[in-house]
Length: 182
Image 1 (tube, rainbow, N blue to C red):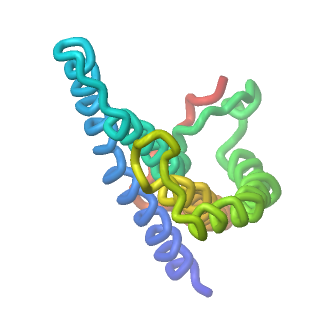
Image 2: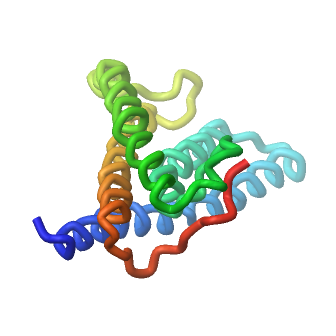
């Protein structure tokens, strides 16, 4: 495979998770508006609605589960490494490549595998809320499978990105987050 082909695949994978992340960011606005509505109805009019309150939980879960791969794509995830910020770009690429291969992807596989029966059971029962809330708990639980799948997709993009860095190939339009690290 040529470097140009690897770059295209890296851009496609990252483009997918970036587009999904930017789209899911709108869930934050819906979450804020929904919370304002719940508070206004509850304290302004004495009206409580369990389904509306549960919808906020669904939005909150979806926001984080769908946006986590975007955070990785933008290299904005939390780093607790006092040495990383001092590493050369090549050393950072090695750290990120090995971390993705030996930590991120195995954790994604474990989350997916451990969640599979839990989600399947919820789908078999078409699980709903136990207290007159939303009838779609099985859809919310499905995000437990979507999360590792999206992270794995972006993980493959990260492997390509860091591999290309190690090969000396420039990546168009990617910001180098040089000053980061705690």
